[in-house]
Image 1 (cartoon, rainbow, N blue to C red):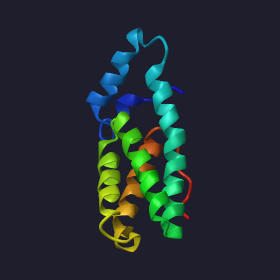
Image 2: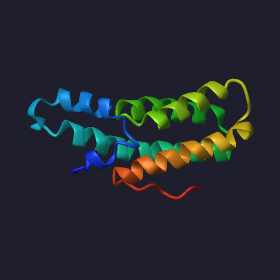
Image 3: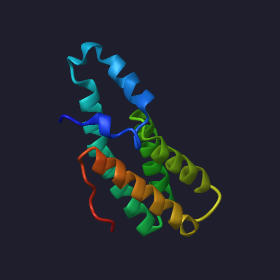
Image 4: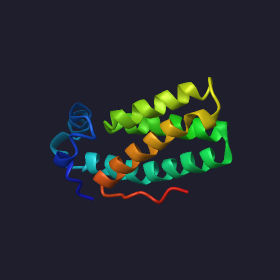
Length: 126
């Protein structure tokens, strides 16, 4: 996978991408591409888990999915997505899922934008 990371600055934090590049001395191992490809795969799966947990009213499942997505999105520099996840994760302890629908929609939209920018697309909302 050869991801055009130069076209991602509005979605991915440039400093985060540079830190990943720095870990790959000489870019010989393709670490950045592998990390982004892994996120594309796991991110799509996690967004589906968020949708399913929301639909089922599964607070525990939703909390687990947004927690995992929060850390993985932060690691690739998808900071807006990570912040949305953190906000939802915090608010899940304070209000029911029904009160978070708008925020979850925002998370889903941002997640789709990141995946589309990475070339992964996203499965339709359920």
